Amino acid sequence: MTVKLTMLLVILVGGVAYAQTAKNQNDMNKNEITVFVDRFYVPKEAIVEFKERTKINRKFIEALDGFIEHAAYESYNDDGNLTLITIAKWESMEAIQKAKQKVQQKYKEEGFDLARMLKRLNITMERGLFKEEEL
Image 1 (tube, helix red, strand yellow):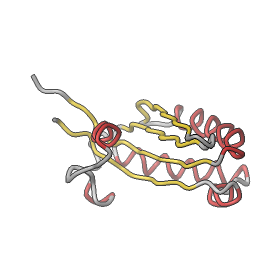
Image 2 (cartoon, rainbow, N blue to C red; image 1 turned 60 degrees about the horizontal axis):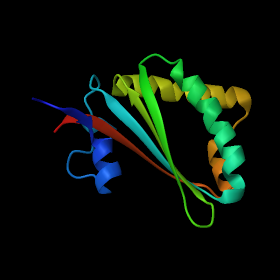
Image 3 (cartoon, rainbow, N blue to C red; image 1 turned 45 degrees about the horizontal axis):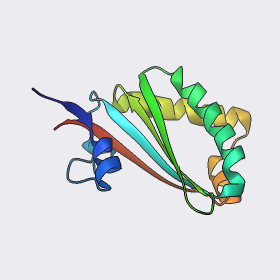
Image 4 (spheres, one colour; image 1 turned 120 degrees about the horizontal axis):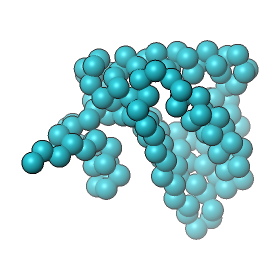
């Protein structure tokens, strides 16, 4: 029996991504399922505003072509700060590229600047692309 899991599951469970992660977007086949992962570190005082923005973004990307599904996982430390991991699964690298363009266009129309918001709220973000892998 062949089981299909995303490499993201390896990261979440084992804390490491080994040789199966794509080194860059050029390593990814344009037609293979691709997982877009963000990890945010959010100070306690920024959580409400940050979560409001993530809801807006999530609702928008759900309607884009090539979007398959998403999930979010959160953890709070003893000081009440948030670590949030968001996962968006896409039909292909090409779908992600088109989605990025549409998201940037929406941000421009709204006058929203993600980098400025992250800096203002002292939020850090790690971002990665992963391909689906048979284990």
